[in-house]
Image (tube, rainbow, N blue to C red; front, side, top):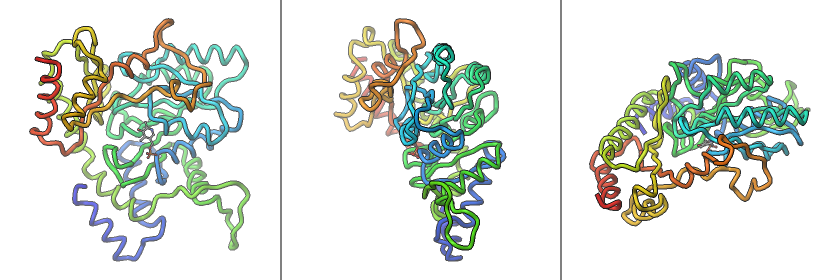
Length: 369
Ligand SMILES: *Cc1c(COP(=O)(O)O)cnc(C)c1O
Protein backbone atom coordinates (compact mmCIF):
# COMPACT_ATOMS: atom_id res chain seq x y z
CA UNK A 1 0.00 0.00 0.00
CA UNK A 2 1.11 3.56 -0.69
CA UNK A 3 -0.72 5.33 2.14
CA UNK A 4 -3.08 7.20 -0.21
CA UNK A 5 -5.61 4.37 -0.01
CA UNK A 6 -6.78 5.33 3.52
CA UNK A 7 -8.08 8.68 2.27
CA UNK A 8 -10.56 6.97 -0.06
CA UNK A 9 -11.47 4.28 2.46
CA UNK A 10 -12.06 6.96 5.09
CA UNK A 11 -14.36 8.80 2.66
CA UNK A 12 -16.37 5.61 2.25
CA UNK A 13 -16.61 5.18 6.04
CA UNK A 14 -17.36 8.88 6.66
CA UNK A 15 -20.26 8.78 4.22
CA UNK A 16 -21.25 5.27 5.41
CA UNK A 17 -20.98 4.09 1.81
CA UNK A 18 -19.92 0.49 2.45
CA UNK A 19 -22.49 -1.14 0.19
CA UNK A 20 -21.43 -2.32 -3.23
CA UNK A 21 -21.00 0.49 -5.73
CA UNK A 22 -20.77 4.14 -4.75
CA UNK A 23 -18.50 7.11 -5.52
CA UNK A 24 -15.20 5.22 -5.32
CA UNK A 25 -16.35 2.71 -7.93
CA UNK A 26 -17.34 5.44 -10.37
CA UNK A 27 -14.18 7.40 -9.59
CA UNK A 28 -11.97 4.36 -10.06
CA UNK A 29 -13.60 3.52 -13.39
CA UNK A 30 -13.08 7.06 -14.71
CA UNK A 31 -9.50 7.21 -13.45
CA UNK A 32 -8.50 3.88 -15.01
CA UNK A 33 -10.17 4.84 -18.32
CA UNK A 34 -8.28 8.15 -18.34
CA UNK A 35 -5.01 6.53 -17.39
CA UNK A 36 -5.07 3.98 -20.23
CA UNK A 37 -6.87 6.23 -22.72
CA UNK A 38 -10.20 4.53 -23.39
CA UNK A 39 -13.77 5.82 -23.23
CA UNK A 40 -14.89 3.71 -20.28
CA UNK A 41 -14.36 0.97 -17.73
CA UNK A 42 -16.48 -1.37 -15.60
CA UNK A 43 -14.97 -2.36 -12.25
CA UNK A 44 -15.61 -5.96 -11.24
CA UNK A 45 -14.64 -8.46 -8.57
CA UNK A 46 -11.74 -10.06 -10.48
CA UNK A 47 -9.83 -10.11 -13.73
CA UNK A 48 -11.37 -13.52 -14.38
CA UNK A 49 -14.87 -12.03 -14.07
CA UNK A 50 -13.88 -9.30 -16.56
CA UNK A 51 -12.79 -11.94 -19.10
CA UNK A 52 -16.02 -13.87 -18.52
CA UNK A 53 -18.12 -10.75 -19.17
CA UNK A 54 -16.09 -9.85 -22.28
CA UNK A 55 -16.75 -13.32 -23.74
CA UNK A 56 -20.48 -12.99 -23.00
CA UNK A 57 -20.57 -9.55 -24.63
CA UNK A 58 -19.00 -11.11 -27.73
CA UNK A 59 -21.79 -13.68 -27.70
CA UNK A 60 -19.60 -16.71 -27.02
CA UNK A 61 -21.88 -19.69 -26.48
CA UNK A 62 -21.86 -23.41 -25.99
CA UNK A 63 -20.02 -25.19 -28.81
CA UNK A 64 -18.22 -22.05 -30.03
CA UNK A 65 -14.45 -21.88 -30.23
CA UNK A 66 -12.18 -19.19 -28.79
CA UNK A 67 -8.50 -18.80 -29.73
CA UNK A 68 -6.29 -18.14 -26.72
CA UNK A 69 -2.60 -17.73 -25.87
CA UNK A 70 -1.25 -20.97 -24.42
CA UNK A 71 1.52 -19.50 -22.26
CA UNK A 72 -0.55 -17.89 -19.51
CA UNK A 73 -2.26 -18.35 -16.17
CA UNK A 74 -5.32 -20.62 -16.24
CA UNK A 75 -7.62 -17.68 -15.42
CA UNK A 76 -7.30 -16.52 -19.04
CA UNK A 77 -9.05 -19.64 -20.35
CA UNK A 78 -11.34 -20.76 -17.50
CA UNK A 79 -14.16 -18.39 -18.56
CA UNK A 80 -14.19 -20.09 -22.00
CA UNK A 81 -15.15 -23.27 -20.15
CA UNK A 82 -17.79 -21.47 -18.03
CA UNK A 83 -19.61 -20.79 -21.30
CA UNK A 84 -19.31 -24.34 -22.63
CA UNK A 85 -17.08 -23.09 -25.44
CA UNK A 86 -13.85 -24.71 -26.59
CA UNK A 87 -10.43 -23.09 -26.35
CA UNK A 88 -7.91 -23.52 -29.17
CA UNK A 89 -4.44 -22.68 -27.93
CA UNK A 90 -1.88 -20.62 -29.83
CA UNK A 91 1.88 -20.83 -29.28
CA UNK A 92 4.21 -17.97 -28.34
CA UNK A 93 6.90 -16.42 -30.51
CA UNK A 94 10.42 -15.82 -29.19
CA UNK A 95 10.68 -12.01 -29.26
CA UNK A 96 7.72 -11.22 -27.02
CA UNK A 97 6.99 -14.65 -25.47
CA UNK A 98 3.40 -13.80 -26.44
CA UNK A 99 1.00 -15.04 -29.13
CA UNK A 100 2.71 -15.99 -32.38
CA UNK A 101 1.20 -14.36 -35.50
CA UNK A 102 2.39 -17.37 -37.51
CA UNK A 103 0.62 -19.87 -35.26
CA UNK A 104 -2.48 -17.64 -35.18
CA UNK A 105 -2.62 -17.53 -38.98
CA UNK A 106 -2.30 -21.34 -39.12
CA UNK A 107 -5.17 -21.72 -36.66
CA UNK A 108 -7.35 -19.30 -38.65
CA UNK A 109 -6.59 -21.05 -41.93
CA UNK A 110 -7.64 -24.39 -40.53
CA UNK A 111 -10.74 -22.90 -38.89
CA UNK A 112 -11.73 -21.17 -42.15
CA UNK A 113 -11.21 -24.39 -44.13
CA UNK A 114 -13.55 -26.18 -41.73
CA UNK A 115 -16.05 -23.35 -41.97
CA UNK A 116 -16.00 -22.57 -38.25
CA UNK A 117 -14.22 -19.39 -37.21
CA UNK A 118 -13.71 -18.61 -33.50
CA UNK A 119 -16.00 -16.10 -31.80
CA UNK A 120 -13.07 -14.28 -30.17
CA UNK A 121 -9.30 -14.27 -29.78
CA UNK A 122 -7.83 -13.74 -26.29
CA UNK A 123 -4.34 -12.27 -26.56
CA UNK A 124 -2.30 -12.22 -23.34
CA UNK A 125 0.39 -9.64 -22.55
CA UNK A 126 2.58 -11.72 -20.30
CA UNK A 127 4.74 -10.49 -17.40
CA UNK A 128 4.16 -6.90 -18.56
CA UNK A 129 5.32 -7.49 -22.12
CA UNK A 130 2.83 -6.60 -24.84
CA UNK A 131 2.16 -9.06 -27.70
CA UNK A 132 2.99 -8.21 -31.31
CA UNK A 133 -0.26 -6.32 -31.87
CA UNK A 134 0.99 -4.86 -35.18
CA UNK A 135 0.96 -8.32 -36.66
CA UNK A 136 -1.79 -10.02 -34.65
CA UNK A 137 -4.56 -7.44 -35.06
CA UNK A 138 -4.54 -7.39 -38.91
CA UNK A 139 -4.95 -11.20 -38.91
CA UNK A 140 -7.96 -10.98 -36.57
CA UNK A 141 -9.38 -8.13 -38.69
CA UNK A 142 -8.95 -10.12 -41.88
CA UNK A 143 -11.13 -12.88 -40.43
CA UNK A 144 -13.33 -10.29 -38.69
CA UNK A 145 -12.95 -11.85 -35.26
CA UNK A 146 -12.85 -9.52 -32.22
CA UNK A 147 -9.94 -9.42 -29.75
CA UNK A 148 -10.00 -9.51 -25.95
CA UNK A 149 -6.71 -8.36 -24.50
CA UNK A 150 -5.76 -10.03 -21.21
CA UNK A 151 -3.61 -7.25 -19.77
CA UNK A 152 -3.96 -8.54 -16.18
CA UNK A 153 -0.18 -8.39 -15.75
CA UNK A 154 0.56 -5.33 -17.85
CA UNK A 155 -1.16 -2.24 -16.48
CA UNK A 156 1.28 0.62 -17.14
CA UNK A 157 2.91 -1.05 -20.17
CA UNK A 158 2.68 0.52 -23.63
CA UNK A 159 3.39 -0.18 -27.28
CA UNK A 160 4.34 2.88 -29.35
CA UNK A 161 2.89 4.98 -26.54
CA UNK A 162 -0.52 3.23 -26.57
CA UNK A 163 -1.52 1.45 -23.37
CA UNK A 164 -1.50 -2.31 -23.09
CA UNK A 165 -5.12 -3.42 -22.79
CA UNK A 166 -6.48 -0.86 -25.28
CA UNK A 167 -5.77 -2.64 -28.55
CA UNK A 168 -8.71 -5.05 -28.64
CA UNK A 169 -12.48 -4.61 -28.55
CA UNK A 170 -12.15 -5.29 -24.82
CA UNK A 171 -9.22 -5.19 -22.44
CA UNK A 172 -9.05 -6.49 -18.90
CA UNK A 173 -6.80 -5.72 -15.92
CA UNK A 174 -6.53 -7.56 -12.62
CA UNK A 175 -6.04 -6.07 -9.14
CA UNK A 176 -5.36 -9.38 -7.45
CA UNK A 177 -2.87 -9.24 -4.58
CA UNK A 178 0.10 -10.23 -6.74
CA UNK A 179 -0.43 -7.68 -9.53
CA UNK A 180 1.40 -4.36 -10.01
CA UNK A 181 -1.39 -2.52 -8.20
CA UNK A 182 -4.00 -4.27 -6.11
CA UNK A 183 -7.39 -3.84 -4.47
CA UNK A 184 -6.68 -7.10 -2.57
CA UNK A 185 -8.97 -8.67 -5.18
CA UNK A 186 -10.61 -7.07 -8.19
CA UNK A 187 -10.54 -6.47 -11.90
CA UNK A 188 -11.77 -4.12 -14.59
CA UNK A 189 -13.10 -4.33 -18.12
CA UNK A 190 -12.17 -1.48 -20.49
CA UNK A 191 -13.49 -0.58 -23.92
CA UNK A 192 -14.39 2.28 -26.23
CA UNK A 193 -17.87 0.76 -26.61
CA UNK A 194 -19.82 2.46 -23.84
CA UNK A 195 -23.02 0.54 -24.55
CA UNK A 196 -21.16 -2.76 -24.13
CA UNK A 197 -19.76 -1.56 -20.78
CA UNK A 198 -23.26 -0.58 -19.68
CA UNK A 199 -24.35 -4.13 -20.53
CA UNK A 200 -21.39 -5.49 -18.55
CA UNK A 201 -22.48 -3.50 -15.46
CA UNK A 202 -26.02 -4.83 -15.91
CA UNK A 203 -24.83 -8.45 -16.15
CA UNK A 204 -22.49 -7.94 -13.19
CA UNK A 205 -25.36 -6.82 -10.93
CA UNK A 206 -27.60 -9.88 -11.44
CA UNK A 207 -29.04 -8.62 -14.75
CA UNK A 208 -31.88 -6.77 -13.09
CA UNK A 209 -34.38 -5.32 -15.56
CA UNK A 210 -35.53 -1.71 -15.05
CA UNK A 211 -38.66 -2.21 -12.91
CA UNK A 212 -39.69 -1.32 -9.38
CA UNK A 213 -39.98 -4.99 -8.49
CA UNK A 214 -37.17 -7.50 -9.04
CA UNK A 215 -37.44 -8.67 -12.62
CA UNK A 216 -34.91 -10.69 -14.62
CA UNK A 217 -34.92 -11.82 -18.24
CA UNK A 218 -31.44 -13.32 -18.52
CA UNK A 219 -28.86 -14.91 -16.23
CA UNK A 220 -26.73 -12.41 -14.33
CA UNK A 221 -23.72 -12.46 -12.04
CA UNK A 222 -22.67 -10.90 -8.75
CA UNK A 223 -19.45 -9.46 -10.13
CA UNK A 224 -19.28 -5.78 -9.11
CA UNK A 225 -16.40 -4.34 -7.11
CA UNK A 226 -17.21 -2.92 -3.66
CA UNK A 227 -16.90 0.78 -2.86
CA UNK A 228 -14.22 0.01 -0.25
CA UNK A 229 -12.02 -2.00 -2.61
CA UNK A 230 -12.43 0.58 -5.36
CA UNK A 231 -11.12 3.12 -2.81
CA UNK A 232 -7.97 1.05 -2.38
CA UNK A 233 -7.67 0.94 -6.17
CA UNK A 234 -7.87 4.74 -6.45
CA UNK A 235 -5.06 5.15 -3.93
CA UNK A 236 -2.98 2.54 -5.74
CA UNK A 237 -3.52 4.08 -9.16
CA UNK A 238 -1.98 7.33 -7.89
CA UNK A 239 1.36 5.51 -7.55
CA UNK A 240 1.26 3.29 -10.64
CA UNK A 241 4.04 5.21 -12.41
CA UNK A 242 6.30 4.78 -9.37
CA UNK A 243 5.49 1.07 -9.25
CA UNK A 244 6.38 0.64 -12.92
CA UNK A 245 9.65 2.52 -12.39
CA UNK A 246 10.44 0.38 -9.35
CA UNK A 247 9.84 -2.89 -11.23
CA UNK A 248 11.86 -1.68 -14.21
CA UNK A 249 14.71 -0.73 -11.89
CA UNK A 250 14.60 -4.17 -10.30
CA UNK A 251 14.78 -5.75 -13.75
CA UNK A 252 17.73 -3.54 -14.75
CA UNK A 253 19.68 -4.39 -11.62
CA UNK A 254 19.23 -8.12 -12.15
CA UNK A 255 20.22 -7.71 -15.77
CA UNK A 256 23.32 -5.67 -14.97
CA UNK A 257 24.45 -8.05 -12.27
CA UNK A 258 23.98 -11.13 -14.41
CA UNK A 259 25.02 -9.74 -17.78
CA UNK A 260 28.35 -11.56 -17.75
CA UNK A 261 26.73 -14.92 -17.13
CA UNK A 262 26.59 -16.61 -20.50
CA UNK A 263 23.59 -18.86 -20.87
CA UNK A 264 21.10 -16.47 -19.25
CA UNK A 265 18.77 -14.51 -21.55
CA UNK A 266 16.37 -12.01 -20.02
CA UNK A 267 12.83 -11.62 -21.37
CA UNK A 268 13.19 -9.29 -24.33
CA UNK A 269 11.46 -5.94 -24.76
CA UNK A 270 11.03 -5.54 -28.50
CA UNK A 271 11.21 -2.28 -30.46
CA UNK A 272 8.42 0.13 -29.49
CA UNK A 273 7.34 -1.83 -26.45
CA UNK A 274 7.64 -0.52 -22.90
CA UNK A 275 7.08 -3.21 -20.27
CA UNK A 276 6.04 -2.64 -16.67
CA UNK A 277 8.39 -5.58 -15.92
CA UNK A 278 5.80 -7.04 -13.57
CA UNK A 279 8.13 -9.98 -13.06
CA UNK A 280 11.79 -10.28 -13.96
CA UNK A 281 12.11 -13.47 -15.97
CA UNK A 282 14.87 -15.11 -17.94
CA UNK A 283 15.60 -18.34 -19.75
CA UNK A 284 18.69 -20.43 -19.26
CA UNK A 285 20.66 -22.47 -21.72
CA UNK A 286 21.10 -25.79 -19.94
CA UNK A 287 24.19 -26.78 -21.86
CA UNK A 288 26.09 -23.58 -21.10
CA UNK A 289 24.94 -23.28 -17.46
CA UNK A 290 25.29 -26.98 -16.73
CA UNK A 291 21.97 -27.32 -14.94
CA UNK A 292 18.25 -27.21 -15.70
CA UNK A 293 16.00 -24.31 -14.80
CA UNK A 294 14.31 -26.61 -12.27
CA UNK A 295 17.62 -27.33 -10.56
CA UNK A 296 18.38 -23.61 -10.39
CA UNK A 297 14.90 -22.84 -9.01
CA UNK A 298 15.20 -25.59 -6.43
CA UNK A 299 18.57 -24.28 -5.27
CA UNK A 300 17.12 -20.77 -4.91
CA UNK A 301 14.04 -22.03 -3.05
CA UNK A 302 16.35 -23.90 -0.66
CA UNK A 303 17.96 -20.54 0.14
CA UNK A 304 14.49 -19.12 0.80
CA UNK A 305 14.46 -17.17 -2.46
CA UNK A 306 11.02 -17.33 -4.03
CA UNK A 307 11.93 -18.24 -7.62
CA UNK A 308 9.40 -20.00 -9.84
CA UNK A 309 9.07 -21.55 -13.29
CA UNK A 310 7.17 -19.52 -15.91
CA UNK A 311 3.51 -20.41 -16.50
CA UNK A 312 2.91 -23.98 -17.61
CA UNK A 313 1.35 -23.69 -21.08
CA UNK A 314 -2.37 -24.40 -21.01
CA UNK A 315 -2.26 -26.97 -23.82
CA UNK A 316 -0.11 -29.09 -21.46
CA UNK A 317 -2.59 -28.87 -18.58
CA UNK A 318 -4.66 -31.97 -17.79
CA UNK A 319 -7.71 -29.65 -17.81
CA UNK A 320 -7.19 -28.91 -21.51
CA UNK A 321 -5.76 -32.22 -22.71
CA UNK A 322 -8.21 -32.45 -25.61
CA UNK A 323 -7.74 -28.88 -26.85
CA UNK A 324 -6.15 -28.10 -30.21
CA UNK A 325 -2.81 -26.31 -30.25
CA UNK A 326 -0.99 -24.48 -33.07
CA UNK A 327 2.77 -23.94 -32.92
CA UNK A 328 5.05 -21.17 -34.15
CA UNK A 329 7.67 -23.48 -35.69
CA UNK A 330 6.70 -26.69 -37.47
CA UNK A 331 8.72 -28.99 -35.25
CA UNK A 332 9.05 -26.99 -32.04
CA UNK A 333 6.80 -25.44 -29.46
CA UNK A 334 8.10 -22.06 -28.27
CA UNK A 335 5.84 -21.96 -25.20
CA UNK A 336 7.06 -25.42 -24.10
CA UNK A 337 10.69 -24.32 -24.49
CA UNK A 338 9.98 -21.21 -22.41
CA UNK A 339 8.28 -23.34 -19.76
CA UNK A 340 11.27 -25.70 -19.59
CA UNK A 341 13.97 -23.04 -19.56
CA UNK A 342 12.27 -20.08 -17.86
CA UNK A 343 12.83 -18.70 -14.36
CA UNK A 344 10.80 -15.97 -12.58
CA UNK A 345 12.65 -14.01 -9.92
CA UNK A 346 11.30 -12.16 -6.87
CA UNK A 347 10.32 -8.75 -8.26
CA UNK A 348 8.09 -6.96 -5.72
CA UNK A 349 8.08 -3.16 -6.09
CA UNK A 350 9.25 -2.79 -2.48
CA UNK A 351 12.29 -5.08 -2.78
CA UNK A 352 15.41 -3.48 -1.34
CA UNK A 353 18.78 -3.54 -3.03
CA UNK A 354 20.01 -5.86 -0.25
CA UNK A 355 17.17 -8.30 -0.99
CA UNK A 356 18.07 -8.27 -4.64
CA UNK A 357 21.73 -8.71 -3.86
CA UNK A 358 20.94 -11.87 -1.95
CA UNK A 359 19.04 -13.20 -4.98
CA UNK A 360 21.74 -12.59 -7.55
CA UNK A 361 24.50 -13.74 -5.19
CA UNK A 362 22.55 -16.99 -4.75
CA UNK A 363 22.24 -17.37 -8.51
CA UNK A 364 25.95 -16.77 -9.03
CA UNK A 365 26.87 -19.17 -6.25
CA UNK A 366 24.54 -21.86 -7.59
CA UNK A 367 25.89 -21.75 -11.11
CA UNK A 368 29.42 -21.56 -9.67
CA UNK A 369 30.67 -18.24 -10.94
C1 LIG B 1 -3.95 -12.64 -12.56
C2 LIG B 1 -4.30 -13.01 -13.94
C3 LIG B 1 -5.64 -13.18 -14.35
C4 LIG B 1 -6.80 -13.22 -13.41
O1 LIG B 1 -7.02 -12.15 -12.63
P1 LIG B 1 -7.81 -12.34 -11.22
O2 LIG B 1 -8.07 -10.94 -10.81
O3 LIG B 1 -6.89 -13.07 -10.30
O4 LIG B 1 -9.05 -13.09 -11.52
C5 LIG B 1 -5.89 -13.41 -15.69
N1 LIG B 1 -4.91 -13.51 -16.57
C6 LIG B 1 -3.61 -13.39 -16.23
C7 LIG B 1 -2.58 -13.49 -17.28
C8 LIG B 1 -3.27 -13.16 -14.89
O5 LIG B 1 -1.97 -13.07 -14.55
